[in-house]
Length: 140
Image (tube, rainbow, N blue to C red; front, top):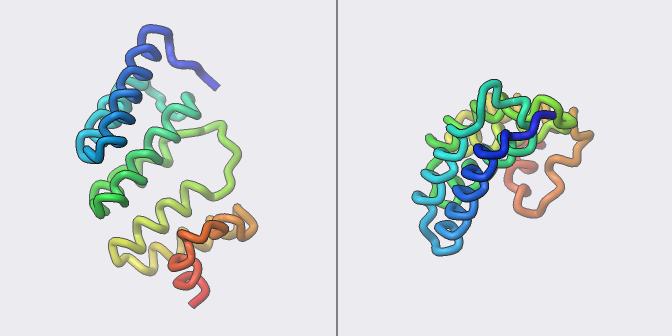
């Protein structure tokens, strides 16, 4: 797994801290904009910077869910597959993509992603109580 070069990492961390402050202040759109700026700092191929890229994209998607911006969440759900090449594959990327597809009303796509996530995670992907509606949909 590659590590961000020092000058990039320093700027990356500063932007993340700024984004966290905006998030804590309820400025979710500004938080997302800063996270997108941080994404642009990660060199190509972004997927070799496992932790930085994956968590950054996940944070953007999670914040999009807070503000119900599922179109932007979809844009980033597509990018999550460009991250974390060396992460253990537990179906998390597919689960996130399934949630986004569900919220956009793309139910067949959601079910397909949930099927993959369920298989890879051996059912653990639905473990959180906040995922009950997705589990109920998947089981239906």
